[in-house]
Length: 63
Image (cartoon, rainbow, N blue to C red; front, side, top):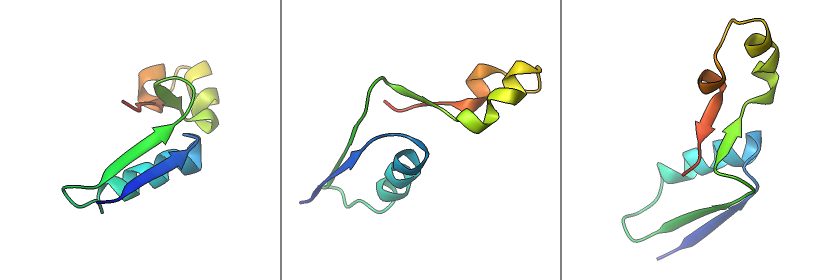
């Protein structure tokens, strides 16, 4: 059994957590340490500002 801990859920940490999740064995654990429970893809903020996307379209629920 392994316990993988990802520190920070910015762009790199979020991608790493999703990639690692697909590689875990049934008895492995994955934890992400970050502030809050969601990640907002910051480069997409201009799209939200001009109405091309909604906030929910560029936000990932980390739970």
